[in-house]
Length: 509
Image 1: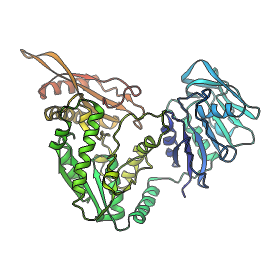
Image 2: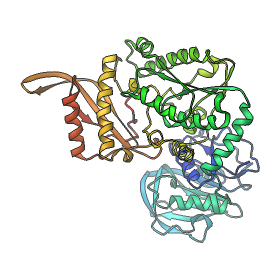
Image 3: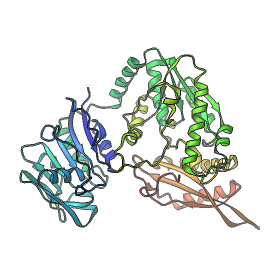
Image 4: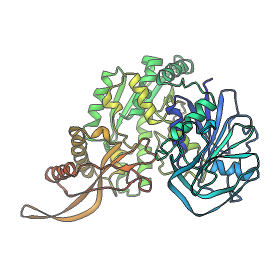
């Protein structure tokens, strides 16, 4: 069994970032809800308690039984986790006089302590809490402070237990990665052996043992996740993998044809299905984002099921589910709200009575790309920006028509092509155009027009959990705007979205 760091989730928006930082150290980790602690097996080398939107002073706040962990394994409490261990064992936590949020600097660091080795005095850290520890139990020792937070870090004497009231996983904690390495590698003694090569070898062997000679069907999307999943499965079971790529009429311009061509070069057995009209018919008149998503999901299930029935004796359904999807599906009920209802082909397994195989369900998006690179998958696929499952349907605000899709495809192509031509595409995490239900007056030549507006959206991110709007050059935006208005009939105004996530999601719906 591979060495594992266990992360107990109390509902923090940053929990996935902790996992990512641990994975970057080539150490495998898993996130589990605080109320569903898995068995503590020999391969679990240490435990991290996440932050939380809850206050430990709330009688209904999360309060798990840590008796099987604390004092027995290396344990690190982050923010809420630190406050929980302080209050639970004899300390005090009170509401801060003012919310401690944003950048702070450590004014005291005990760098002889194993957790803070290599952490400099005045090191910048990121705070995000409304409560603060005002008293620690007698056997606790202060190992870090800021000007305003005396108990920024502590350890428990005669235990390998630590608590910190800042977030080392966040980019703004400049030496946070050093602290996490101290804990994961030095304190937990993890060997840093979890690499793309080791993942591929282990996964292919597991797939061979699980599937044997059965047939597997996989719905391809043209994106990174499903493509990498397909190549892994192909490596394991060869011709017994059957792939279906459905054109829902909501793809980017010429995407259906180009993706099919890409898959041919990869040696995959792929059938393309044109189902545009079925999707348009189901979407007719729908304006609510959630209803649009569900309509798309319904038709996809119908089309996919119909095509899968042509494959004799298929036993397995493969999905490109990645770890963030899994985390959301098992997350702590309440703190972690569901933002969107689509993930891959949700509901399909029950409908089709097939066994499910998800070879990527332990990986984050950037890890999927690293595995894909090791598998020699083309950069055009690996480097593609994330594209939502419902496609352009959630980039058209309001009802969906074939004409709106055509207009948005043209606009999107101009935007993306210009990003590539300008060398900006790889600097952007995700980009796209939004068809707004807004008309405005414009003067084009001698003609007065009353046509639609387009919003352009481009963000930078590492994981999609948080994102900043991308500061594209004005000259570039001006060129793109001019080209869209001149070339795409029906559009007379272009705006640029400068909102960051949170609060604004990357997609508009």
